[in-house]
Length: 259
Image (tube, rainbow, N blue to C red):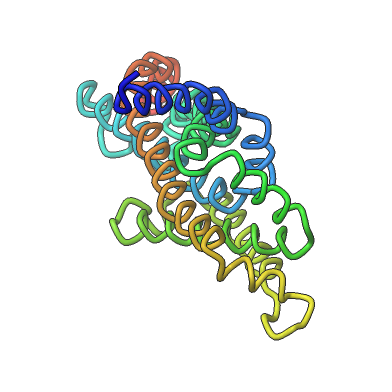
């Protein structure tokens, strides 16, 4: 057998032998999902709830303003009028249900996280990460990463002007975000000078630790931001499709105006 052919066959056999092991390491979802459960995106979720409540109300108020113009309801058809406010509540309620299902629940996150993790980390790396983040100092570092991800998502939506400060109707969501952010900011802090945190410092400075933090801050921030954009983009069309829900309140408004 020629030497070149022998080397080719040996190389092919090596690839075929290695493929099942590599595939299993890369596609086994259990450790990847376990790694996901270590993280708590509560502050980012609260931020998203605040933003998507804003966008739900923007979409709803645009529809009601259009109804006011088309039906010549006059200047009194606005926020603060009982009929207008009731119509706003009726139309926005299904939009907020969609927000809860498509954002707040995080049911969608598993598939996107799994795809990201399998593309970014080997099975051995995922195992190492799960072991580290299951330790006390690892859990603390997971909080730091979660807080950093939220910071970058918030920065993107604030600096771009998407998140409107003091938007009427989002007071409760803003209050929740403020409290959750403060809790997370407090819980993630620890002294790097303490001897017991040497393990955490070693991980943070290791190639895998740096890679994991960098990957999550870039890729997970992107996943979360893109999801918010996708959900927000569906709200105007849904609000328009629900315009008929305002009809009884428009009738109430006309009755009250005629008195």
